Image (cartoon, rainbow, N blue to C red; front, side, top):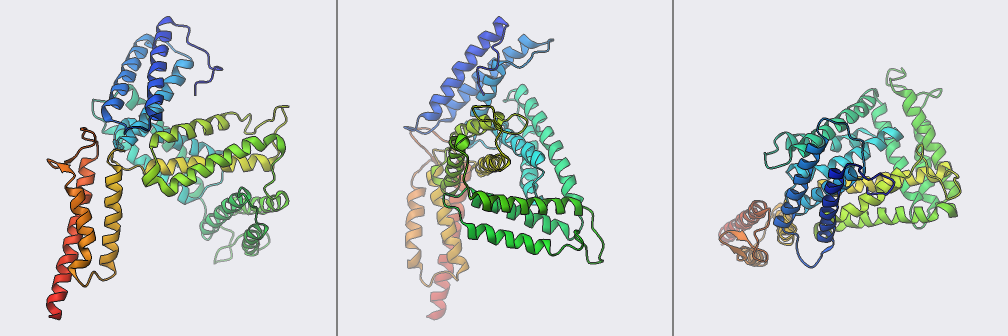
Length: 441
């Protein structure tokens, strides 16, 4: 994002703004790296206000003239990207700044889906839902946020909506029974790509997917899919091409068995490492993720993605990667962007400081719901462990608020609401147990 290849601004005023933004970005990076204490809202908002002030100055400097992109724009992008992840970290997920990082990732995903032309209706459902939510956030933004930011976000959301509508049109053109076949083929293709990037290649696993492809191929009549009436449905050509592509990929994967040429091996190892780290975070997100950590993953992925020339990578001697390597890399990058997106939309509207309490309550609620669904308890005594834990959490409050280091972190309402739900569930189970005991007596 701050590559020296991007020229520095020539205007003296812009150079001054650039220096200020670089200082803000460095402060954000230092705050991100500090694991000795929780991130406080006031620290983030102070840096946000400083950034907004620099944006105000920049708009005044550039008013009335067309400015080409320079290093200042890239550093500003970095600041907003970091601030966006900080807003998620402090639990302010429904405010405009938090939407910035999401729009960046969604745009990357949509560009890749458009480029590859390999996507299903399910891929678009989540993205559509998220864009609808972001539209509401941007349109209902309070005056407290920069008009520049809200205007920028509005354009980004609008662009993403335009891209996704074009993709939806392609899927909607498929007539029965093609949507289900198309969905299955996309699933098999991704499963083969996953098998292709595992530490230990399994020939048996890939052969199993190839058998499934052959079974789908056998459904064709004279090379075409047909509907119940024996007619060729709209979209047959696209789905047939996808099937043929899957069969070719299956043969390539079985032939290469995950072996990457030496000149591209370092890049492959890095991409696999990023993918694996993101998958680990997905499994332990509630307890280990600080949203600002995603910034480093995004930067690495963006650099790899932007290193392509005409869609492909080149080695040090200027030779392009062969198709097998190119497709393997693209799978890893797209999978990683998808994981970053999933982690972002799963961000809880609770400050990092309150997450330990919030996660404990989520676990308690799940346990109490399971107890209720399995028929309840036979005696109120069985609820003592839950009651003691709930009371210990309740006793942490001071005047109805959870304090951390003297601060009142964001997300109080969400944590208090969850605590109340747990108390209600516990109460219902206790009353049921007392009624059962009374009936048996």
